[in-house]
Image 1 (cartoon, rainbow, N blue to C red):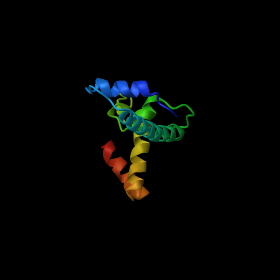
Image 2 (cartoon, one colour):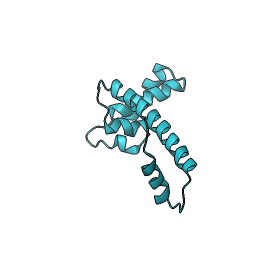
Image 3 (cartoon, rainbow, N blue to C red):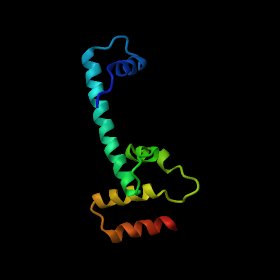
Length: 108
């Protein structure tokens, strides 16, 4: 993946830089590509857990840990938020019983 240099340079300039070196553009371009790759991989995982082949904006929002992901007024718990919480709890070493207990507390 290659992000064009001109938009990257423009981002730096719009942030207030008067002059931008080519090395600065290259460094930010590399960071943006790495970050976009990481977010994309996480979003793909969320889409797969939701049994979808299509990555949606909500998957991206979850991948970047955006509060917009849980702004669903019609649902008490967004299923993707629940999945994310389960994986985070499991990665912290919590067992399934402890995870279930934490969800039961949320329902009260």
